Length: 366
Length: 116
Image 1 (tube, chains in turn orange, green):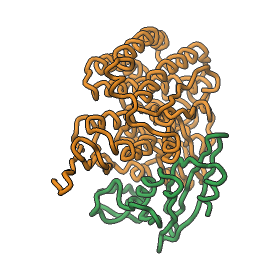
Image 2 (spheres, each protein chain N blue to C red; image 1 turned 90 degrees about the vertical axis):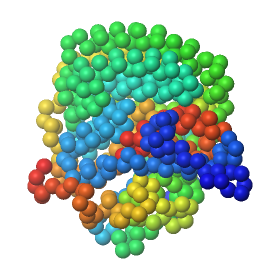
Image 3 (cartoon, helix red, strand yellow; image 1 turned 135 degrees about the vertical axis):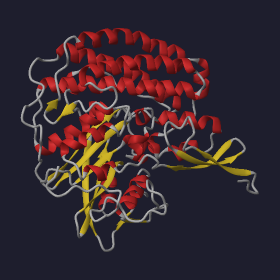
Image 4 (cartoon, rainbow over the protein chains, first blue to last red; image 1 turned 90 degrees about the horizontal axis):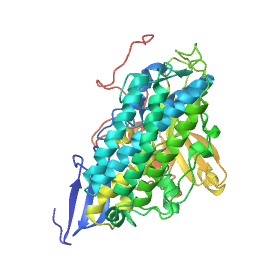
């Protein structure tokens, strides 16, 4: 639509290949420069929160797999932890360690996709394929343990559904040894690549004030220099027993967000190794919490997902179904920054900026 | 106003806003966090079903924008002073607010009472 000011409106999405899902951005352009942008979401809205009011607590678990489908293990953990907190269920030690290992493996798998697609955004296909090669190995590990490659539903209230199979820890260790070398490869191929540095430096800059005001979390918040990671600031599971660092940025630009994700993969490897070495023997389920009917009340539990603060707010009226289930989705909150970030940039940088927020629309729209 | 209080007390980070349908009232929850010395505060308030209006938090917390639009979309609670209060997930012509307990639609699957 041409207006008298030589500006025009252009629709990016919902079927645009580089918007990471069904996301529509109505751009007001002046030449190649974005003047303003109006995001539109909801194309993947399945009413998960409404559906779960009509399901028992156990039946809600598979729904959580389908929220952030790149981090299904993390969603399962956050949901089971919220219900466990409400119902007062104790989880055996070994199950806590298994949860940490699975959460960190899933963090690596999710960051691999984020980094790989950031490569696609600037036109390098190689990194994307390399990342998917390693992700396959992680999915194989998940398949060994849970039987599924994407929608795991591996955790249960009071533990995990079954113990790790024989030889799983050795497979995992072998993968981690190989993987650390591969992370160096990604760093050379993409993160320190001069072309990527030129493209991604100093665009999509988020100031500290902006990130706080929007309630951003995860790598988006940490890229502005705030070391806020729930694994450190509010340790859950057994994260306080492990030694790891929280990488933070300075400028809050696109490059730093991808660099933080790369560093976090290294830290996750360190956590998984420590967890595998110190994992106690013992039961993986408390044995009597397969079905739960929590008392009336509410509970909120937040975990650090690859995208930030993933929280489940569960309200119970004492019945067998949740009275209300609210998912505090980090991708939803981080994505609300998008119109601030793309105003004033060139249209070619818009997909790069959207990708650096790492939205997953199963979770944004729920 | 409790939102102003939270902000003045250093809780400058809004984690989320949500609502629960309690029949005659809607109960609203705001969760504020302070990052300098980790702490969280959950603020509750009720608004009547007849005239569900709540004050906006967007003046102090920009992130409240989408949270409030989501609640408006799914519960029909209006936020006074919100700059752009319109549906966020559902299409503009949609009728009703699905997360209300009395929402009826042929697309909502209901199970008989006592059947799980």
